[in-house]
Structures are given as C-alpha cells and as structure tokens.
Length: 214
Ligand code: AMP
Image (tube, rainbow, N blue to C red):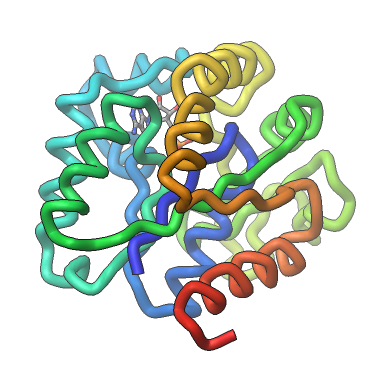
C-alpha cells in the first residue's frame, strides 16, 4: 500500500498519516520531519520562512529512506510530492517498480487552515497534536501533553505570516497536483473540515474499497 497525501498546511496529513501507519502497520515517512531534524542552518531558515527546500535535496533524502527494508511493502508519505517536478519523479519511481499509489487529497478552506495553524502545538516526545484555538483539542493542562506529560512545542513555521506564505506556495506549487492525479484516476477527495475520527473512517473506506475488503 503506497499512500500519498496532497493537502494544504494544517489539513491533518501528519495526524492521518500516523493513524494509517498504526492501523495498517506501514511506516509513516514525513519529509517535513526529516527537515525539522536537520542541523543545516540554510534549511532551518527556509522552514522558518515557509519556503520549499529544493527538489534535489528532498528527493535524495526521500529515496534513501524508501530504500530501507521496512518500506518495501508500502508506506504512507506525508509531505511529498509538493510540486509537479517531484510528482513526476516519484510517479516514475513507482511505475518502474510496478507499484500503484493511492492519492488522498484533503480539502480544507483557507480560513480554517489558518485558525488551526495558529493554535497548533505538538508533543516532541510522542507526536500528539493539540490546538489552543479549538476547545475539544486543547490539552487538559496548558502546554502539557495529556499522554506523556511532556512540554508541548509550537512549530517555528506555525504563525500567521508564515502561514500566508505557505498557503500561497501550496496554491501555486502543490495544488496543480490535484489535477495531475485526477487525470491519472487515482485521486480521492476527503473533506478535512470535520472531527479526526470521522475523517479517518472515510480514509479507511477508501483504502478498504481499493483493497477489496469493503
Ligand atoms: P510539513 O511538515 O509537511 O508541513 O513540511 C514543513 C516544511 O518542510 C514545508 O513548509 C517545506 O518548507 C518543507 N518541505 C517538506 N516537504 C517538502 C517537499 N516535498 N519539498 C519541498 N519542501 C518541503
């Protein structure tokens, strides 16, 4: 199972990737996480400014990861491809292996994405995601993870100004992939403005339907 997410910032691709990974026992591969863990000052600055990292760096990082043993039978990709060039390189990579991808497109209005981004906090220890802007997503104790009691952190690129830039980049660079995958007939739209468990049920239906167990 080779799953690809196309989504604007804060639509939940990280959250749903983790849920898919857990349920189907496949690795969750996040290009954003690779980059956030780097010590390269140039990359850090680009992340803070909401700019994309160049295609060569990102494809090298990704393909090294995809060559690891745990990725042979599938994975869920979170954050790649982000533009048409990356999509074409990746499509060719999968076609050469005779593998098909399932493309999940998360649709979310810009105003909701903005609200989610500004309040988003994550646990650096267990990866749980919270949001101070939504009562049902706040941690019980301010800035403390409910699950492991670690201190929550706010991503440096989760602010209003960087959001505008990231959203604009999404529209210009990533949104054209929606048409690209619709034309290839492997795109599945999901309304991302709902409660996470309900959205995940939709995702399970799509995956189950394609695997013939629904
Ligand atoms: P994400 O965690 O997926 O929102 O990614 C965070 C940031 O990492 C993005 O805003 C980009 O700056 C960078 N990034 C992640 N994936 C890619 C990619 N495939 N191509 C270029 N930049 C990326």
